[in-house]
Length: 336
Image (cartoon, rainbow, N blue to C red; front, side):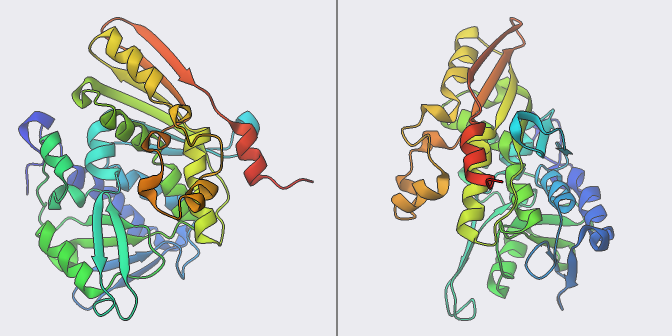
């Protein structure tokens, strides 16, 4: 059995902590609307919305798997701020849960010839990322997980088709896994589970923005967040737009930090999405106007709508930004 992460993280292993949740997902596949397939080599594929119906509950479970067993995701039907369903996310280890596990940062691709005539591309998220360590982020975090013999290891792919063999082989090789350990969860954004697990990234989006702003990640010691859960759209582009809008205009995050009041105050002011020049329109429209090139979008847009930052060293709290539920209702709600 591996002893988990590097010394600076207290031996925490996102894969070992997530393993019981992965096992529970497989055991409860039927009621959750999932379809489980075991490939000839032993790799397990979980269809969470391609041919299987999936469910919001499956998306909640997948969201917690993505957080490496270090976070909670809860559906709240509280009809607050003019919308019926909200996701509430929290973690006592937001850096590991969000950046070392949940962040969709592992680029996986295959050409036409390798993928059966159509190029394949996906960004992998979940605890298996910390085994591969293929991203520079892991060196910066000083974290690398080790495989736990025999325990299931999950990687989540936001795709509408199964990955080709060449991609599966790469994942096995880079993670140093036996095929029987690998569980690939396939979650198209146009599905209930896919939409849910993406909106469950609201805290992760805040953590990524804090990282981009240069805030000391080790000074972030706790985090919670919420965002409204829209209905999925059968149109993949619209579905992606809705999940982004849910966070950009409906996401609220609370980070507990240590350090100087100046740094905490600055983080609160700079974190919200309204600091972006692209703020104020649906993400689908913004993406279209930039000719579907993510890199043309102002990076400051990728953030929650509202930020609360509490400095535990001084006891002071700052708040900036605000929800824009009027915009979301205009985008998501049909007139009666």
